[in-house]
Amino acid sequence: MSNNPVKLTPSNLSALMCARICHDLVSPVGALSAALEVLGDESNADMHEDAMSLVRTSAEQAAAKLKFLRLAFGAGTSAPGVIGMDHTKALVEDMYKSGKAAIRWETNIEGLEKSHTRLILNLAMIAVQSIPRGGDLTIGIAQTPDAHILTLSAEGPKARISPEFLRALSGKAPDGGFDGRTIQPFYTGMIVRELKGRVDANLDGETAKFSVFLPSIAAKNAA
Image 1 (cartoon, rainbow, N blue to C red):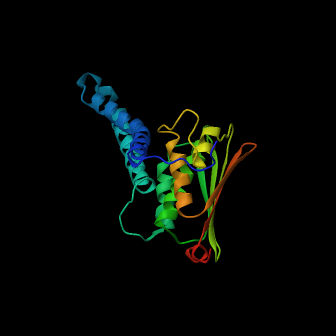
Image 2: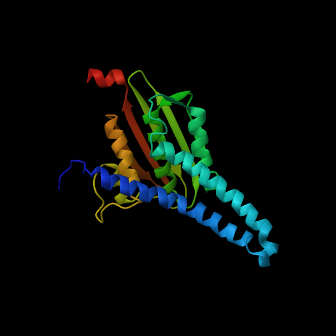
Image 3: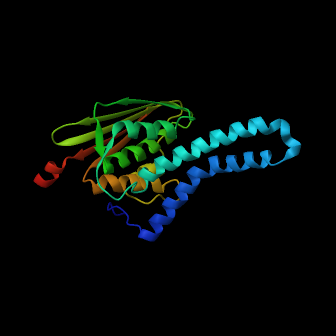
């Protein structure tokens, strides 16, 4: 079997990424639709207050996911630039505010290039999925003269990193082919490779660890 990363056509990649976006948005949008149906039913007037609460919660979740996915999977804007860490932290924390993962940051960096920020968002998605029963996610970002080093440590009961995710992250096709779930780690690996970096993932007991080494522009030019 070849060790070279698999290549997807642009149309296949975009179709699979769209499937992933729909997967992430279907829950809050579906809940919003259900709540509006209750509000439109006069015979359920006693449930209107609960329905309004669900409308507010679902709308907040949908908005948070759209903002997150816009930068994680899209361009955000076409111009290059630096994304402030405060904005990055807000995107991640709002995305998972109603989830089971408590997020902690270990960095004193004020901002990152857009491509690096996109990578952090995608790594956060993978890390949160590795602790399906919840737990603690620590995101560390360090900078040296030669590189940025990203570390994510997700600790929780039944932590896991599936072989399919590992294959996709390394650029290989899962045994059953790509779907809306496995295309996201594949896309994450694509970003790492485009940045001339490397990514490692391993499971240590109930802790899933992800680390990325990204050479600086100067280091890339010197290579």
